[in-house]
Amino acid sequence: MRKISNVFYITIGLIIVAVGYGVIAADSFAAVTSSIKSFISSSFGWYYMLLLSLLLVLSLFAIFSPAGKIRLGKDDDRPSFSTITWIAMLFSAGMGIGLVFYGAAEPLSHYAINPPTAEPNTDAAFKEAMRYTFFHWGFHVWAMYGIVALSLAYFQFRKGEPGLISATLKPIFGKKMEGPLGVLIDVLAVFATAFGVATSLGFGAVQINAGLNYLFGFTIGFTSQLIIIVVVTILFIMSAWSGLSKGIKYLSNTNLLLALALLGFVLILGPTLLIFDIFTDTLGGYLANLVSMSFRTAPLNAGHREWMDSWTIFYWAWWISWAPFVSMFIARVSKGRTIREFMVVVMLAPTLLSAIWFSAFGTAAINIQKEGIADLAKSSTELTIFEMFHTMPMSFIISVFAVILIASFFITSADSATFVLGMQSTYGSLTPPNSVKIIWGVIQSTIAIILLSVNGLTALQNTIIIAALPFSFIMLLMVISLIKALKGERPKRKLKVRE
Image 1 (cartoon, helix red, strand yellow):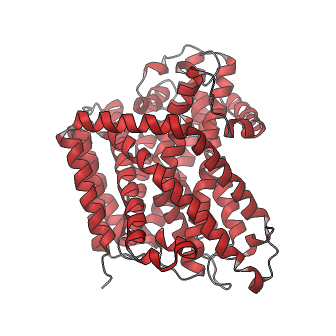
Image 2 (cartoon, rainbow, N blue to C red):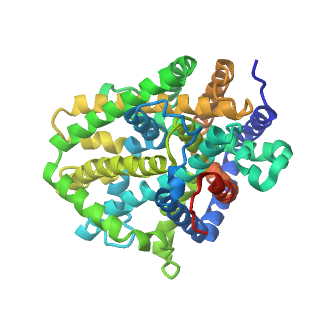
């Protein structure tokens, strides 16, 4: 019987305290977390910009250095999953429901509501909107996930360490990582994962509710969202019970097929030529402006800085808060890959898929707004995509596809998270017991339900972004630890890694 670690009990205690505060004193919880989040955004924006840019540079170094030949496992280990299934798993865990939620809404917001620098509803705003959407979902995000996942996979599969964040820091802290300090680090990772996924479940339920309202007239409200979460919880617990090689594998492949089908609908029924032109032009603009966007903090323009805090800095903190979950899952399914193969695919495949996705959905939404076909800018975020479909042929069928895809992403994210949370609370076990996974699944759903009932999802989102700051320092230590460990490979493998 695999033992449950202290991380499990400590984290659940903290969750009870945080959720209790959010329920008993909802206004206070929202005000306090909003204030702290604003302070972090304004005071540490420069730090987040530098951090993710550093991780992007390190990712490129990992690809092109001789260390790229090192295998994540023993030298004779080979991947457990096909490349397509592996990419589907990366895509589902790392982006998933967010692509559907923001696919049309984010580019439209940058174009018509609040552009980064251009005037709203102009051609300049159109280009800028797409470029910054690519930026927020592109190389920086996946470089960060990749480096954290690389560290976890390297120590877990090559060095035989348990699958814990704390275990990656042993080259720096040694045996201290097996004591209270290690527990503290793992508790932070589990706390961020549990709340991050609970927030995603809440937003997913809201969008499924919006889609069912649009399609079938289902009432929008807490009761409908409660039913949605309960149904999805039963489904993802069934999937979690079947294990990594069955439930999550099949769900991830299904997600990719459904996403490609929905993308195909929009490409064919939307402004096809304009979508491909915008994709090509924006990809070039994104690459050409990558360095300037990576270091932009707008220190002398209050309006531009406010936009940065609301979007770019928010995203960077949000992605960091998701790193323990996403990176751990990526590491778990990547055994047997070389460092070079791992980093190339992790950075390139999801970035390109996201760029094509936002080009299609963003261009279609902006074109509808620009041509005056409908005023999508007035729609709520969760309804934007359905209002966009309403202007297209076969709108009912496309909307049904979208709801199914959201639900499938919903189930996969929760399923993957229960697996990771199970690992983290059973001393890094690669096959956590079903009982522990089910407990975590119920806890995640309960958090989402409770906070939806008191409109506390925004405050919860603030809490996760606050938790991202201390975890960002842990990420830096993980990088130092990984570099130190890779240097130890040189005498044995005769690697000439430049100092």
